[in-house]
Length: 463
Image 1 (cartoon, helix red, strand yellow):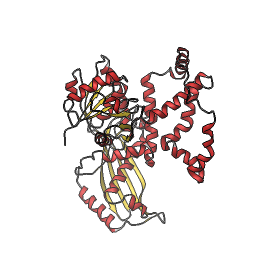
Image 2 (cartoon, rainbow, N blue to C red):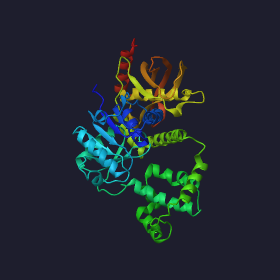
Image 3 (cartoon, one colour):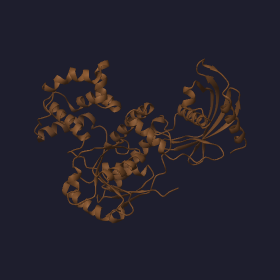
């Protein structure tokens, strides 16, 4: 196994901490430079949330964590780094100073990215720095989008690395202030400020308008695809013809900005406190993370939006080493699978057993192509023995034994083992081969029957 690659994180705040978590939980060693005396505490809290949330996106286990280290020596942080990410405050003079040092000390082959939300690459490189814009979105350890702007070769190498840690690199071909996503957000933000200032809506009412309506549509389809559907059978051209005239109506104040007075700040801050001041920032982060994991896993089922990125990344994750018995599942228990007792709900033991059965069948050729051709196996019985608790974040490893493969019937035994070696459960599963045209049991074709019989013979006496 190759040694972990190293990421150097310059600035360990909310964004820098999110970058550190994304790399660390994908098996990279991470070195952090941050002079803030509270940096270690803040970073540990971000990592705790990431460890709680990120594995919940996947049905395979993430690679073993890399090694985390904090330094007060910039040279030590940069030494041997394959990726350097700067996330210092949005002051151009500070970024010039930091990137001058990074360019002088970082390895020549390292990708050097800036988390800047507003500055263009030409501004960052004006004093000779070697850097591209690599602008992520909070929480960096969950949201896949990274806007890349800058030197073509540098951006290409950056994109390859980002895909390997489960992110979605969006290459912006021409530089512009605030890139793409923040320009869109700024438009919504400006209009929202006016709505609050003019007494039309409160901060909570604006948030409800987004999260109860178009925010859900945007999560899966974005803007233009959503409007294409709004055009009906006639498509986008019809939508544009119908709503295009509204561009000349006084619906927005985007060309005007409300005076950013202390009174406006106090008004918005007060409404925001009333809306969610009863929760701590960490509680809000965990609520956000749980909601994001749930929505992104739902999108994963159809490959839509961020769900497609998760599926592609999951396919890149290292597969478990096979022993005498096949390892059919290796994954972590997501937070959403636990109940009021704090351990995995019994229904999810069965869910893991179903995943193990599907993986075993894929090994002998019962895959999606086989099912689309009109044949499959249906589960007719599960017998579960619950032997030990499984808690959120624990890794479960499943080995599967083919107990019998006789005619139309297949009998499997799944053993669920925790990382500490304790057997958490056993599941005996009985399946019948089915002709999907008649929805009745039928013998499997000879090549499937032979593969299962061979596997059953090989599993006799295996531990």
